[in-house]
Image 1 (cartoon, rainbow, N blue to C red):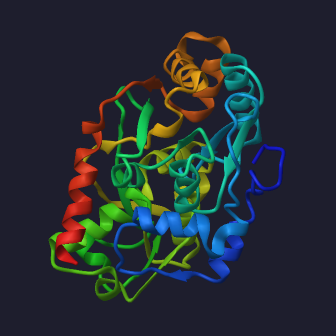
Image 2 (image 1 turned 90 degrees about the vertical axis):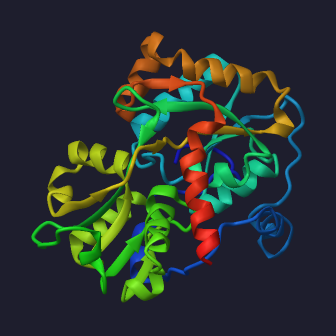
Length: 316
C-alpha cells in the first residue's frame, strides 16, 4: 500500500501467489481472544508488533486497513490519504498487514488510532473499541457473505459443496469464514468434516481467484468485494457463480480503541467520513470504493454477527 515507514506499513500485492502456493489448512477453530492478541503483541511476534508509544498528536495518524479494503488500487489509496490528511490535519499513515488478527492487535493495543476492520473482530473486542462510522452500500450499512463455486458447476444449494476443496479468506473474517462456519454449526457440521480440504487465501480477491482457477472448488467471500469485482475484473468473476447469499449483516466498520477516545483526530476522522459525500474529493473516494457514504451506527448493528459467534461457540 501507500506508506512511509517500514514497520508501520507492509507491502501489498505479494501475498496471493505465496498463499496459494502454500495454502494454510483451516481449523475448525474458535474466535481469537484478548489473550491471543496480547500474546501476539508481547511474545514471539514482538518484532512485528514492537510497542510504539503514540505520543498525543505529535505523530502520524495511523489508519489501519484489513484485506476487506480494496487495497491494490493505488489511485484509491492516494485519494483516501489525501482526503483524510486535509480533513484531519497532519500526516496520515495507512497501515496494512496480511491478516485481520494483526491489524486487530495493533488497534486493540492502541498502536494505531483507527482501522477499517471486520464485524467479527469488532464483536469480539467491542468492550475495547468505539465505532467511528460504517460504510453505506446500496443505501444501507449492510452486506452479505457469498458461497461461490466455479461457473460451470451444477450445484443447487450449499449442501452440494460437501466434499469440496474450499477457500476461506481469513479465520477472523465474518463473510470469509464465520458465516460459513456458523451455517455448518447450525447443521451439526465442522469445516474439517464437511469439506475434503479447506485453506485460507488471506484476501477476498484471492478466494475468487482460487475458485476461478480451479485451485478451490468453492469459496466463502465478501459479497461487496465480489460485486465490485464484477465491474473491475468481470472476466475473472464470470468464471464463478454464487451458490448462496447470507442474510444482510453489518458492513465492516471503522473503529478506534477506547484508549484514544479523547484524541481530537478521531472525532475529525468521524466527521470526515460522515461528510464525505458532501465533498468533491470525498465523492472521488466513494466512487472508487463503490460506496454511497458513511454513517454513525449503533453496536446493535452487529448483533447478528455476535449471534453467529455464539452459535459456533456452543457447537464447539
